[in-house]
Length: 113
Length: 114
Image (cartoon, rainbow over all chains, first blue to last red; front, side, top):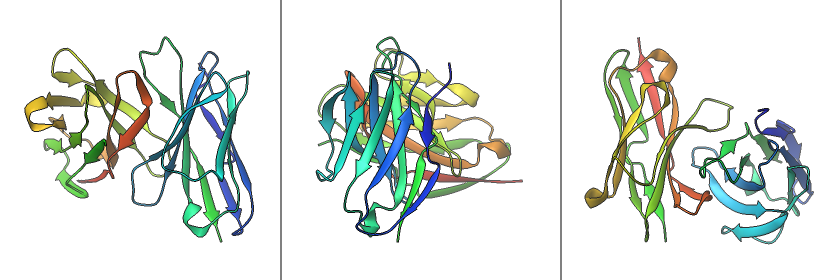
């Protein structure tokens, strides 16, 4: 079991730019959820992917998009970055046999200036 | 709509003292409840979870939580706190069928005094 790995760990972008964050899940983890955690707040659900298809979205605009790949990796893409997008982005993955337990990565800290 | 309230933003306890962190939830169906811990700069680690069975749930690191449906609460407890327990604690609620779409509270920061 190798856990959930996120890259990069830290990132600084300029307002208006685009960013791609990556998550590598454990083998067999065909469900991945992405969360945004602003400073001083709890994580907020962005969206979930199951077998490479979006399977639910939270209250986030379309400029937040994602992809999931057959090798259990996934991406979170954010276009037209705004200052309020500065946050810790977490991915969490699960397998069908995990009794709905999710394993979280350590996150990517995005700063938009 | 589902929601989670953690009334205590910050709690300070002495090492060796008991701890209780409060969590109240609102959910329209059978909830799946979680407690996570987050150390600075780290992701979330699952302490324990509950969706059915015995309402007193045992977790890792000596933590336990009690589900009280009548009070819509899921409070976290530990009989004797260690300095290494200092961290941020999050309560979350999700669907039994899809815990990956959970709603989190805003967390409680625990400080442990020597």
